[in-house]
Image 1: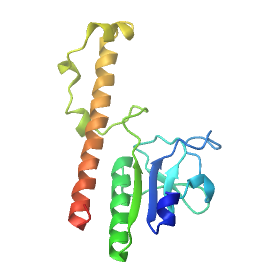
Image 2: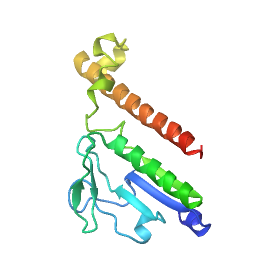
Image 3: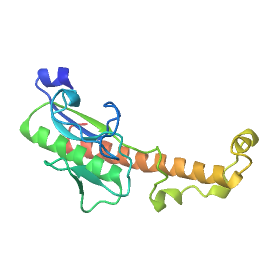
Image 4: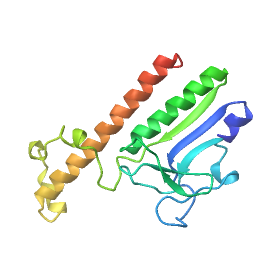
Length: 171
């Protein structure tokens, strides 16, 4: 982002950061302005945050505040990225945006509509995989359902990004 910024690009970042060490105040440490943001000018990032159903951001006072109207963090991330792209297009400025979705990643959170795409009983499990979970086939099936559901949810968001960029005429 530093190199792009020096070349005149607008830069933006949203999502999990994972590049700044520990978490000073619980889930989702605040990354202060300056060099710790690695040149990202517009910042909606946070250190090690994974709360997909409780969508939040930091305000100007470094407090976590709920983002109203969202119940799934990746949807908010996509919307913010597309808003950034629109604003830069309207300003006639080149841009770079880093979209760091959380899923697929613990915690075990996924919207029901994506979980329902993958009924656990339909998976064909390799025997060695079940053995790795002490023979708990139910647990393996639930983990697979969650993983595939989270991947499908992110696939949907990436599709929204691609469609949105095309609608903006910047694909």
